[in-house]
Length: 144
Image 1 (cartoon, rainbow, N blue to C red):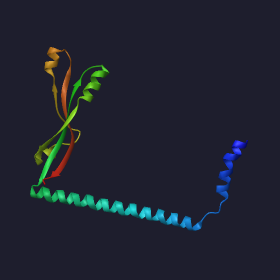
Image 2 (cartoon, rainbow, N blue to C red):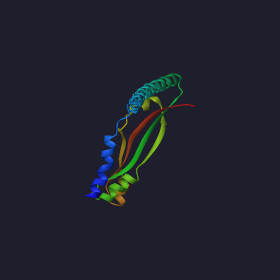
Image 3 (cartoon, rainbow, N blue to C red):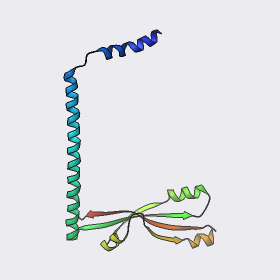
Image 4 (cartoon, rainbow, N blue to C red):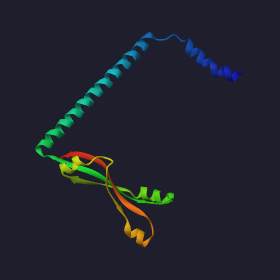
């Protein structure tokens, strides 16, 4: 019983203390200032994004842009063995290639670029599998 009273007494004193109205007003003022600063930050971020888009558009018009496509290459096996699938996922790798504008515009993220049957593995090891290359990213980079 004494432990419960010792635990509750500080809360009773804190709740009975008079509230400082000046402090409450300061807190409300700071909260309002935080909201306005967040709105201003959002507005500035949008302006920066728009300026970056304009910069890239101007650079594209002048031919000052590299078009880069990111590919992911991996093997896939037709197997019920989970370790084979984990190994395939762990051995996947990505690489970036500069391409021309026509190719850049013709591909989309998530598109399968190629899939080839691994005939050598079938003949020598008796495993069914393929190599798969997928497009996982596209970006425009300014020449500097």
